[in-house]
Image 1 (cartoon, rainbow, N blue to C red):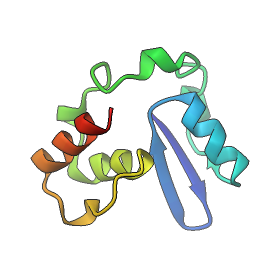
Image 2: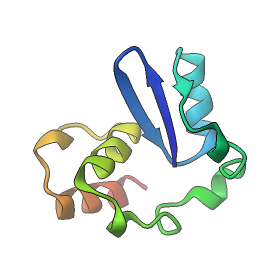
Image 3: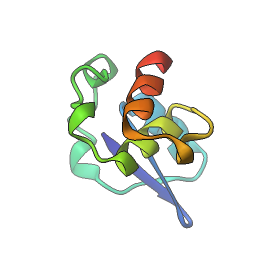
Length: 87
C-alpha cells in the first residue's frame, strides 16, 4: 500500500502504476520505504493485501484510490465488497 498526499488530501493506492499517476498530478509519496516493495504492480493485488485486517478508514482510502464513489457512508463489509468488485 502506498500513501500519497497533496495539500490536505491523502490517497492510498495498491501499486506503483497508480502512485505514479498521482505523482504526475502533484501528489507526494509519504511512505517511500514501500516504494521499492510495490515496484511490481502484479504483486499488489487485493488478495495479497490483507483487506480484512484494514480499518474502515483505511478501506475508505483504498476505495477512493480505486475511484469508488460514496464510500463515506459505507460500512466495513460494504467497503470490502465494493473494493473486490472494482478489481
